Length: 488
Image 1: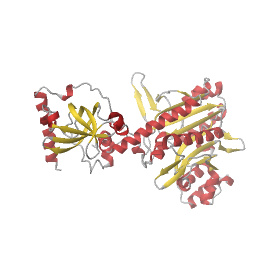
Image 2: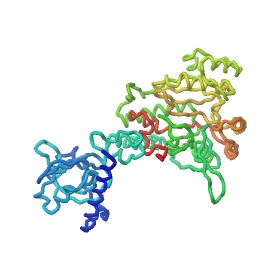
Image 3: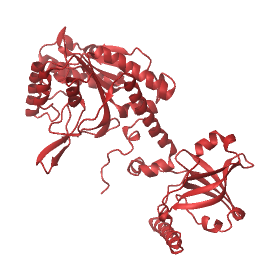
Image 4: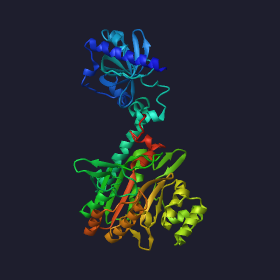
């Protein structure tokens, strides 16, 4: 369709609207419509609705027929149902209804019945135009296929690709079930600030803004961790929050600048307790959402039944590269080993950091079945408690499924002296040019000095979790309005 033809069709719709308005039938003056039934329920419980009068509302998605009988498809929030329109039943409205366009929103009254072909339908006795669509929807069989356009015009995507709505309904169910899981374990859901003077709790570059009244720079939070641990200090034993966080970083199939993060903190628990809880959570979600502890992701079958595999990061690196960083103490030896593997470690100044880079390059994408990667180097874990048996490592793990990090957790560092030293080390990294280094948070040190009990902390990226449970391969397909670059 040429631009000229499209413009002509759009103008025709506006002319139709003006004709209605001139006749005193402005659809935009409609303020409500009483809906007594929805498509999905009528289809599922037809015997309860047969030959009974209902009122329904939705969008016209197709038109068929001619002369004195027409069939329209009405799409509501649950599905589609056929409208049977007969001129004899609508003597004063039929000709006007025939001028309505695909995309128009209508309310109907009529009886539920089955056609001779067995199609569940509404025998329409009244029809009201509730909103006039002034745009052209994509054709049914061609649909809205351009992915960029689908993300930019999600409202159209949801209309013409109904399966998209199923993904987000399942996302909503997942979030409800997560809350059910935590609430049943006596956790308290809380809310913490989105804007703060410092962006802490993770190693990431923040977004900045300016508060005019206070004339100060504020940061959008990159994690939920530090405020939640302050609440543990204050006497809450179990807290969780599921909210948006913001990281000024690259975008790809598993990264969006704003995403939903679940974090929970439990006093008197450690990272072993959290591994058990994560196994229980994933198993619970699988059974509640997918009715099975197995999920299909692409061509892979992934089991979410406990127990998950556990392995030290250093051992996994040795398994996949035959390089043993566990015996290295000299950073130059580690750097040379990484160079032999063709891993870029510029700016990495410790054995632990270099090993982590090698892990990312050689191991991460190999972890298909759920795997807890434990004992992360202390240099990349500024908020985790050291392993008492080997202080080079921390009581931290990340859960990997299908080659992607799905959870991060650790026994929380509650030694204020150790925490201060690690913050100072992070500050030096920032001075040396690391934009993602953790800032020094004096108030958090003060909170630790007041006293944080032994605590286990957990973070799960909700978007990646939803990707797993809905078999979606881009994070943009599980976020209703992903971040997009402006067209112009």
